[in-house]
Length: 609
Image (tube, rainbow, N blue to C red; front, side, top):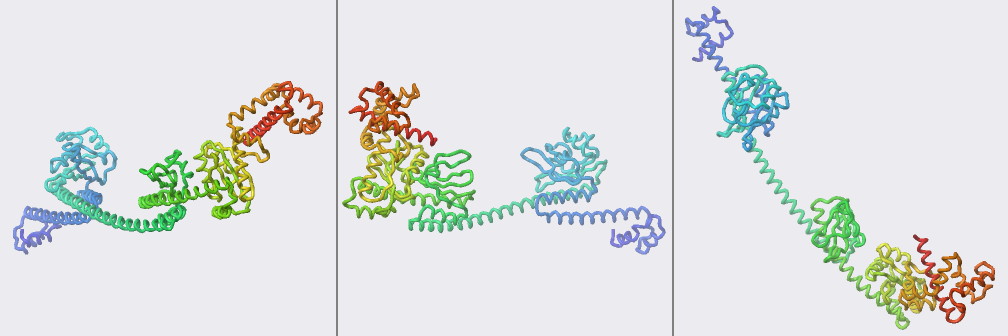
């Protein structure tokens, strides 16, 4: 058809076939005798050209829009929407192939109403969808449920029935022979798709397949670039962190070089990692709550750091010993945790250095106690100068305390921990512990020992610090503790009783021997008192304390003198007629003194409990 023919038909397009003007217009273009059939044929040719032109424009538009999509989901949604619109269908959807499972599944829809249909998944080769996705380039039906030309799956048929689908057109999406899925349009009525419509959907499917491949490649490229950027950022961050570690290590070294304390080091770490960090002494580390349970000690060298319920704890470890720890309150990120862990060896070095200093100090304190005990009058000036280093000044009031303990090693460590912050000196003397200071009391020591599960017998004297009084107080308290141990008494000795020569005797007797002596002497009276509710033991004590004078003893006991005389006769019947004179008097008096001390301390312990 020539250009003049097309122009002629453009002019005649809207005119009826038998319009008289057709012949006149045709004659003016040199086409005399144009018949009705000729006009219809020309019109058909022009319509086909126009349809081809419109299709090309539509495809170009779709291609432009699809290629502009930035991700897979946007691409698929656009393809479905344009396909549904261009073909005037009720719905459009795209399936993608799962080659490993040999299945195809619906990925994106437009116009589908039911979730059963949107979630369809079927083997390749089954149904219209499975045929187009797995093999056939084009597949269609005008009555899906009644069509026997393809294998049916009951579950799929039920989904089709619920959706109300009747007609389906499906075309394969492929690139370079590789099938990626299918593009489909469907109707809830009977419809036979024209070759032009099939061709249009096929071209869109081809564009979609290429766009999907392009999107995948672009996403892969973006992922690669993102990974490269992440790797570069990670390397830069690592480099910055290594520089930070180097600076931090220099700071730690300066603290160590200037002999900083653990508390000072904790402040440095806290400022660097940005969380509160505190130093825990060994005693504070013993009962940390870890993972919901109490833990007796931190782990050793192969695992220095643990997490508690609300903090991270980094231990200072030497061999099997946990020396102390840093506790960072809250949760730490990786970098904070690394920095905290680097402080552990520095804390270990500081504590070991302090321990060496403590050991040297303990040796000097022990020497001072030994010299004070042995008599310090000759070199008192030198001793007093050394005592000043421990805040002990000549002429000041001090407490001199002796302690008997069932575990001397554990007691020694506990005493040093109690005495260190208060000043003064601590050491040992003849198997007993000794403390001399202004601020430490026997009761504090007894509580501290009891908190660590240690039984202790303690005697203390408050005196003025001079050579002679220190020597005397040490002798007195040591003798008192020995007497307490002989009587199996624990706690702090009552300063109101003084055993005198009896105490001196007990200080050199085994505990079992002293107990036997007391029991042998007072047993008859004690048994009688328990059986009759009498007070013969107390009467014997008061009678002997008053030189055997019944009148004086009666006044002390607030009873009649005859009552005392009757009790004295009963005591003579139970023990010996001459119990109140000579050697028997001395033995019984001593035994009664020990018995009263023991009863007093036992009663005091009961009241305390």
